[in-house]
Image (cartoon, rainbow, N blue to C red; front, side, top):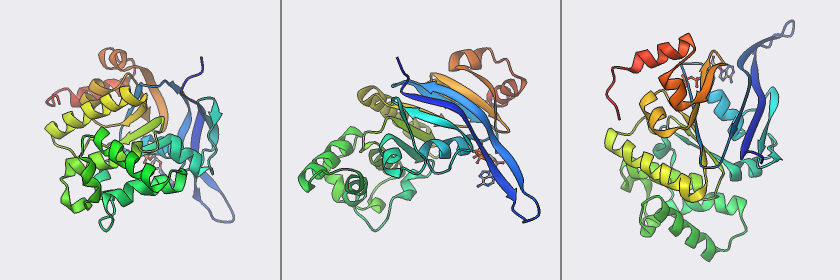
Length: 259
Ligand SMILES: Nc1ncnc2c1ncn2[C@@H]1O[C@H](COP(=O)(O)OP(=O)(O)OP(=O)(O)O)[C@@H](O)[C@H]1O
């Protein structure tokens, strides 16, 4: 059976010197392949500048790959097809709560993707907004409020509602839990795991925090300077790392308190 998402030889290089007399390129992601199933989470770890965000940008369609293909449910994702990408792949950032527009109500912000991507009528849109807010543990009436009326944790839930309202298959969590304190982080992890089971979501978790990776992901890849140095189940990689760089990453976090 085909995987939910299949990434084959995805790579990215940027032009670093565009003088007319010479062209220089820097490869920031070397050809990378993986498969991910529904209800599975794959973590991507690596140091600063290792290519984690570039991979996320390629998956979400914000950058064009130099080589490779992304196949979702047997369908090739086309770089320029924003509607297709928007529906299937969504991303949540570290400061997601602050990306909410302060001058729009929650209803207006959740309605935006529905207006752009669906043919639902106003009643159907309102119903879906109510249901989605409830799914993320908010009240349906919160749709009439503005972002400044919520705490950081609630704003993060609203961003999650915005990400899942189109029922995507893949959600990319780019350090999405990093800014939350320990108790909010635990609540958010539980909510994400519940939604994953309910909706059959696949997550790609970008995180510097190996405690979160251990708790949350099924498998992981370790990136160094744009190259995969190790991949496997999370348990296997964290318990018995083979690569020197992975060992160093794990050692550097051993003494930190667990989540
Ligand atoms: N638009 C761009 N043009 C040129 N180089 C880029 C561009 N975007 C990213 N890079 C380079 O790609 C490399 C990987 O960057 P990336 O942002 O993916 O790192 P990262 O692993 O997410 O790091 P961090 O943990 O700091 O967020 C870096 O060397 C960066 O300078």
